[in-house]
Image (cartoon, rainbow, N blue to C red; front, side):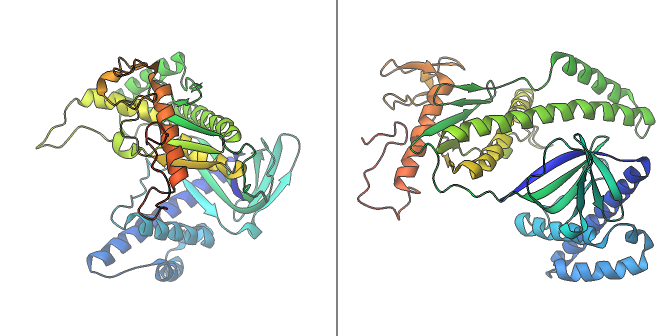
Length: 402
């Protein structure tokens, strides 16, 4: 099974400058290749990876600055561009900006990557044209290296190894028959149907105050100045710590949930649409823009999509099935009787059914509905026209045969 191992690099000044040069060349190749593809599409023609790779070889003979980066790194950039255009469309793929794009490049040939252990805390890796680079040995590799990706976040460089740990997904979960529903919210990151609340604070009060002051300092700084770059770097250190905490929380939560449940049910949320801006256009201004902005920040802060990715990744090692169901009315339906009405929710946390009087925490009630819907999908397949006509219909809300 393929998995990733990321380590913090300790580069010399020359190596850091060389890595930045590699990233800049890859960015130029990406943007040039994307512009070429768009011009071909406007004429009704196609440009793919193979001819672009051949033209890259000709360009390296003409432009000496392209020779500074390893050839297979530039070829990998064109291959990533080809995959992005196939998946998203040529005109929807984004340019790689010098200021907004996080520098990264990949060494796809594992034969050119050598790793050695130097001690308890340190190791080193030999990369083409970079030579031996030291990194912090924070965890064992645990498998055979397939590729290596060097990336920069803020002022810190890291290396990520794609390794094959020889693990195989179990055909059956260790606890078959167990299931759990997860309700993701803006007050609590995740609430499971068994009544467990999974949440943590990703940014401290002191960090929030300091980040706000840095934002004010950034607004007063002049574009292109050294002080502006220092301010952006200081802001990046805070956001990187927040991102690391969020990733650790999602990975830890996903491991606990998948280890104890053979079936995990999530709402099929369109997170990108839910967190879209409400500012509108010049002709049609948006409504309640400030309230929508606060909701967007809360959704992104809780890491809904990151938790979903972590669950899918952890499920590979436990044999857990991750199912997504329709989120409609899960927060307004009573799990006890199935009565659906907006008045059932007295507040963000209180659920009181107007039909049967059932009371519960609103998030737990929603998680139970999500679990029941997932059990119905598991029992009836995809609930499509092709399912067995002998299968009894199951209520989407209660999970029981009506």
